[in-house]
Image 1 (tube, rainbow, N blue to C red):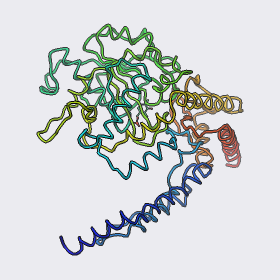
Image 2 (image 1 turned 90 degrees about the vertical axis):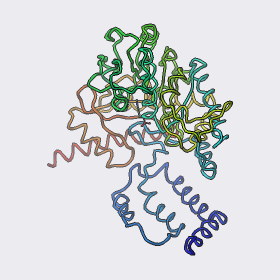
Image 3 (image 1 turned 30 degrees about the vertical axis):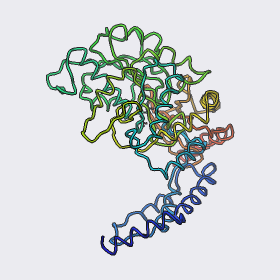
Image 4 (image 1 turned 180 degrees about the vertical axis):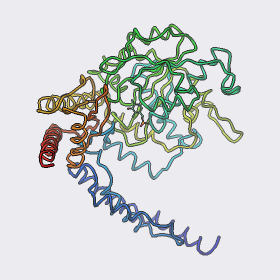
Length: 474
Ligand SMILES: *Cc1c(COP(=O)(O)O)cnc(C)c1O
């Protein structure tokens, strides 16, 4: 070791021991929390401009930890977006349950690698426990296994890999050994309203987007069961629990059992909507979903875990594990305990399970119902208030937590959306729905209050007024 390196080691050891760095980070974090529920929902122009302070060449010399944390706080915090609060309705972005945030905090010091039991017995124990909870909570077959991944995109991918394995195996083809060249053809059937992450997964696994057999959807964005072509044991059928625009659910009851009987593999993308199936008051939406083969769901959306938390659930363990197979002489898999990497595309990964476990343990069954039903009620309040406002029209049935709303013309809708964003009272994004430009509202935070909704509706009203006024002036 050079003298310089020795200094580095001594400095870092001291930093670990005296903890001023961590105290500083904590205090800055607390300051952020104090403001997050009431501040502007999108960074100010000044805050965005100040991000240029990060544009610096990587320096030659060793840095100063406290200065680095201060810099992050000074220029990072004001440019962070507080979906942790109650007025962020863009995309489908959840807040975070406080106990989960605290669990993340403590486990941050542990810095676990949740690949294998020998690497992290605590992470693997919690994965096993949560798998069991989830299977019971959703009422899935008891042989269902769970993999804890970064999000639904990865869960969709893992599901399609498992499906690919099984459907080809049905044809006497081992895709892990033989690959895809010359493999029997797999059919992919899905609805015209499927999420873009499914399209990505379809292309990643080599099925090809051009090979999709598209099924028409109704006005709420759900597959019309009668339009599904004849299925067989070479077919992957992809459904969704929660259309990203309307929140609508495919009719699992009518579709899934029949599709299974035909030999098809059924995957359900339930990134945010699957959680309805874990509630008392909304579980009618997912009726029949338990007969599918695989499901993808996020923790970080409706369940409000911290970010990068997705789950693949699969009732065909052999297919999932074979599809994600890894081998190496140095890998010491456990014979009795869980090795999480068997169920995920990744090997090394952070122990995101800790926050998921803490979230579920904190909420319990009644808390999950209360939180998620609360989002639904808030959505209805929001939609009703907007529908009553002159100049706005709600276009979908509010079955879950998503609302699509528009103004008189596409042009007006877009202008009003940008004006709402500019006002920074709440944040909503845009989408296209049935050929029209729309504003999409996703109520996905436990923290949203009736007052937040009133304040947000006011902002919609003000935005429309301002846009109209500007038009007259121009
Ligand atoms: C968000 C979403 C995804 C992708 O999930 P990530 O967690 O962002 O990877 C997939 N499907 C639907 C329906 C979604 O809403």
